[in-house]
Image (cartoon, rainbow, N blue to C red; front, top):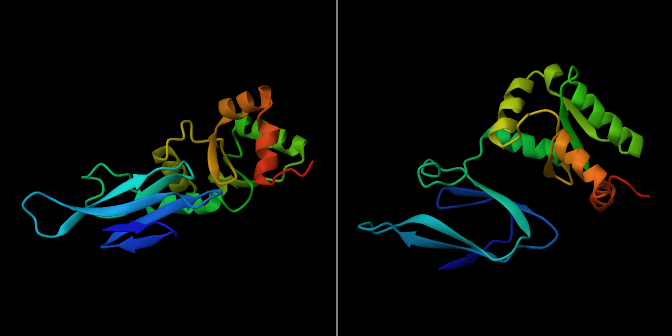
Length: 176
């Protein structure tokens, strides 16, 4: 049985899939398989043939056991915050590299959403979620167009190889 994936998020047999869709609907399907000795479908296999989306998360008790990426409520909150504007920066007010990145974007005329983790009630939890998502160091972390681009090194590399401005234009952060 093949079920096309056309919406996000959705739940099938207690598996919650949260697909991050990009410019096109992905060519993907979910099929069921049965564990040996079992009479009911237990595992969903994801077949995807497109790079139209970059991530999916399972929230199911067996997901971690099956080696699937498990997303916490705080990681989903980070994803929501990261997609609220074309450019989102997770920062700390006392971090000099965070200040440098915020100044760079400001000098370009970009008005990013800045989340100062040391000034937020749940900032420590957000920082831990960023670490679980692979952000090391956790600040500054920059999202452009809802996608994690990285920290200071990645942003400066993009800037020096002249890729940052086109990326900002594609995300709708610059109109020039």
